[in-house]
Image (cartoon, rainbow, N blue to C red; front, side, top):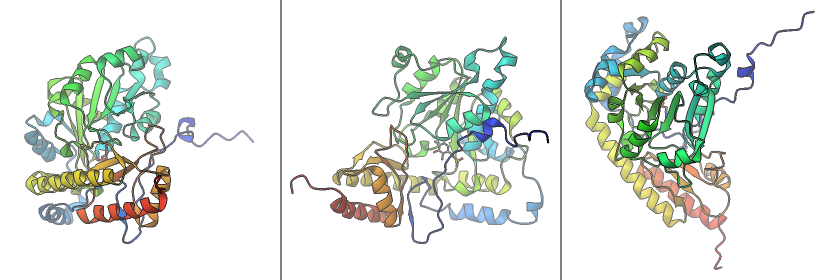
Length: 380
Ligand SMILES: *Cc1c(COP(=O)(O)O)cnc(C)c1O
């Protein structure tokens, strides 16, 4: 018998896939682990989705999501040619890796034509944990560079001195505001970094709606900068998978060549269009979430949690006393789900999504009770 061929490519066999937050089917759970919005989509959006559920489900959706591209272009004061829509922001990221980075395994073939950096996908640590997975799937080289200890972005001069940052990386992915830290970055500091880069920079602004500043203008100012957004977090549409990016038409055309033919589903297109028609509803909810976030941060600090300043819809907080993983489990025992990351930079912290004021109240009361059980008072 001939030796059997392996069924999977070695790269796939050895791949560590992305680990999403749990979606357990438990009743009465307070779910603060995946940065979902606690408020429903607007009634007008729900009506638009219902209205789209008819005989037209037979038909393929608009292949380029053209009406949505036009509405987004109007919203961001640019042209439809500046907008690429994806099946969630995650697909935008995946398309960007495949459009801009060479697979390192092909470098032998291209060696004469491309530099090592052409296969480099670069990002800060910690940031969105999908980036390394996308780079690996594509066979690109990962370059992961630490943020400052306080989770701010190192200045260009510090990056130059450090030597680890590749200013010619094919693709640099920056989560801004950052996840999982929650920290926001000024447009001026991002602009300085973009200007120092000779390669594509994608600013992943999944949480921009909760921040006091955003860098969308950089995507219209620089030929090599993309800004990505999503309808999932601020617009309560996780289930329908709609994300997009804005940038120079040359970059958008490249992304358009490699996406699936009908990458954005019809209900998602209808829902996103209706969302853009009802923005005041969402602005109210966003203001509410920001107020709940800031109050929760203060009350956690009063319980001796170390809370990082947040420009997002979640808080990264270091609990007092026992390891964060113990708190994770004990909160879970009380039917409160938060997120813990087993990465050295953040393993002492819990990431807590902002829910309704009532949900946060339950969290805080439970945390106060757990603190009495778990933290031994040094003065006792
Ligand atoms: C949630 C999230 C995304 C993905 O958004 P989808 O549109 O739901 O795919 C991308 N980037 C960051 C940083 C996120 O937190």
